[in-house]
Image (cartoon, rainbow, N blue to C red; front, side, top):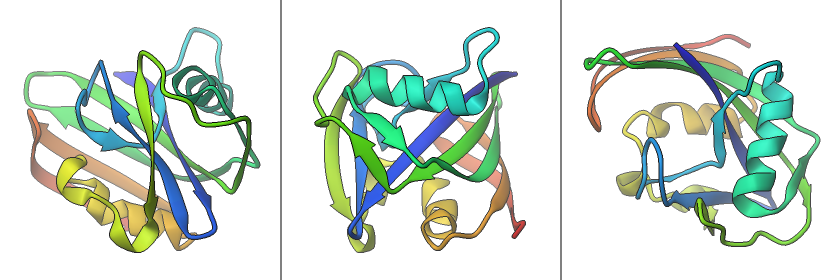
Length: 149
């Protein structure tokens, strides 16, 4: 099982998302993030991945929840989800991602992973969550989502 992070930066009712250019979910819209490197904590990974993908540094990270994804092809990933209300730098397109701002009330769920519509509202409302999702390719087959705080 891989371990990874996702970061959602929210400023004045708008979320900074990315269109992924490569890797798992290429072409989809999501938060910046990626896999932990050896010896790295989830917080260190979250900061590094945002810096690599958008050339900015998130500040004041708050852990929002965890999601475990099982794909029917055998791949699995455990994702630590964070939110930040501040960042330094200017969001910039890189080889990995295109930065995109969206109003929280108008997120492009039709271009995101199917599970995002279930737990992102919890994250943005300040609720902690724990989710388990089963996917076949891009299609969610089953899920369990609990609010934990």
